[in-house]
Image 1 (cartoon, rainbow, N blue to C red):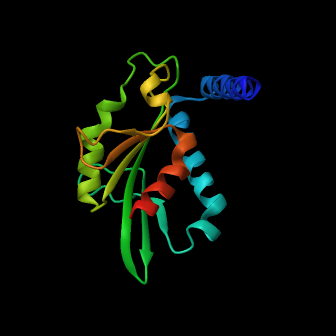
Image 2: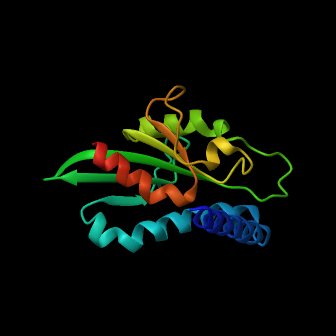
Length: 166
């Protein structure tokens, strides 16, 4: 059991180092876009057999002045039964003013409401040293209704959990 735990810790540490190296090699804009691409690729890998009738696309409607990154909607017999607004946030380690996850809650909630989405998910690599966000799915519904903060590795899991709950 201890060997398994050490192996998991080593894998996580290697992943952290790989991500740090990856982020260091990119511009700030590219870093943000790479997180979006990562999530889109994760979704598309399993889309045909896990989410065959689901809508998952970039939110391109900015007529209200802002927009989320992605919208997920799924249907049963043509009726929508779940909708999720996703916002992806990332920054390079050399960014002068570090953002906190909570800096984006209000705008994400506003975007969620404007697009009539039930849930709001912040996919974030911000606050890399914050154990609260590093331990898994964080429910921030005490501040904003039906809002969660996750690390990218929990992207598919949160969709599946919320679908099951719906």
